[in-house]
Amino acid sequence: MSRRVIYYNAGKSYEPETVALMDVLGILNNSTNYGTSPYDLTGVELWTYIDKFFVATKGAFSLTLKVNNLSTVFDAMWLFLLDSATSCKYNAVNPVDSDAAFRLSFSGGWTFNGAGIKGNASNAYANTHWDSLAKAGAQQLLFGGYQRGKGTTGLEGTWDLTNATRIYEFGLFDGYTLGSQSSAGNANLRFTAVNLDSTNMKTYDKDGLDLSYSAPTLTLINKPFYLGARNNNNASINQYSDIEWAMRFITGKAVTESQILAWIPIVHQLQIDLKRNV
Image (cartoon, rainbow, N blue to C red):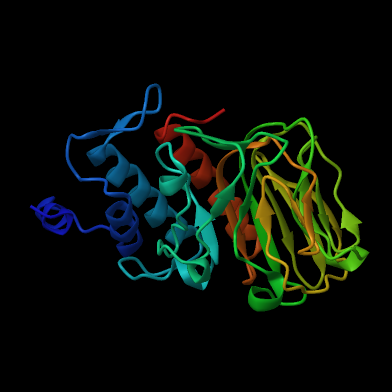
């Protein structure tokens, strides 16, 4: 029996993004166990939790249910399911194994487990194949994730060797640099994000809005954003990081503060469901 037949026999109508992601990961909607302890879950649990997350996310961003439409808000969202480079590479918004679909290309020493992904701070990086020139408006960018702990070193992102093209976060604390503006870090981990529009650059943590700045000038560049290290002008890779991430997201589409605030507890609930919250 194929996964599609199992899905239709489950007696529930799932979001199309759920079906696509579970299908590419080979997760059956039954009692089969996936992952390793303490993060192991059954296929039924994974289908249920991921679908609940997608449904709630669509509600936070006022999207119609039962339509493949998360891509109208997010360019990429990596949920880092199971415990391999293969399972963690897929963009849940469009889980296709291609650079154009923003699947991650991992290099160097990564740790993959049910908690997420973590670089080794010496040679690990992942190319997201996402660049601001192709995907973002000049003053329109949201990126971040669920950070399970502070790193001890490094940066993650991209840089064109000029101040206005810096897009990265720090490993030593959950602070960000966009264009020529750097945010101060703080001790509130878990959900971390920065959102830029024509008026403000705002940073968020697990408790909601953290800090707000006047919007810096961001020069769009065709240098792909890296996880685990900084893409240094497409010429070198440096500032390797050891941050542990349970999920990451990035988009060049407009997102409001109220939408982000509504989404933060949804992201937290997913991590609770997947047994990897901190």
